Amino acid sequence: MDTLAMHISNGIINGPVAAIFAALTLAALAFCVMRGRADLDDRLAPMAGLVAAFIFAVQMLNFPIFTAGVSGHLLGGALAAMLVGPWVGALCVAVVLIVQALVFGDGGVAMLGLNITNMALLGTAAAYLLIALLLRVLPRTPAGLAVTAFVSALVSVVVASQGFVLQYWLGGTTDLGGNLTGLAGTMAFAHLLIGIGEGLITATTVVTVAKVRPDLVYALRALKPVTPAPAVPVAGGAR
Image 1 (tube, rainbow, N blue to C red):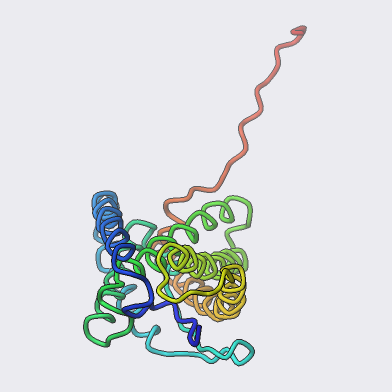
Image 2 (image 1 turned 90 degrees about the vertical axis):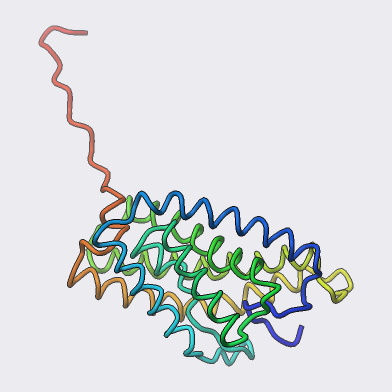
């Protein structure tokens, strides 16, 4: 394929597969709305708007990946998951993708279900699962938070790229001659490099917010640190 963009253009995936993913995406976003409403409060609601605006602005800035011959930009799944949680975070990224497709033509309108699935749903879900794991084993210091943000962002980008490979296997309009493994490897390598840039941006942003207002970082509030169980005294003479 000439380009390895995560924003899928019209015609790359056939209509039936695009329609199926559009329906699945609508159902998933409705579920995110239902779960996200429980999280919304006076802190999270304005923060969600700021996160969406920040992701939209930073996505307009591309950085070149010379070794892969492509350019990359922030996807935002890990950043949104850390700051506003997985449910609201997925909605923030989805809104950004919809605006980009409708206003700037970045990704086909008919392919919105595919793009939202990869970047808003898969990317955010993979990121938050890693965040939940890492924040339970790493110290909650700026360094530990930076490592968590970097690793989750990098992995989320690669996972999102493999979502496209799955979609292309289901309904790609160009015959790759059975070289789907090659496509998967190429996408993974290119987006691994893009993920490094994503990780640096995400880590820098999250650590900066945490130093000023740690109460605004959803992951620090929602994911409580693991505390060891208190020792149970043993009565004398007990066996």
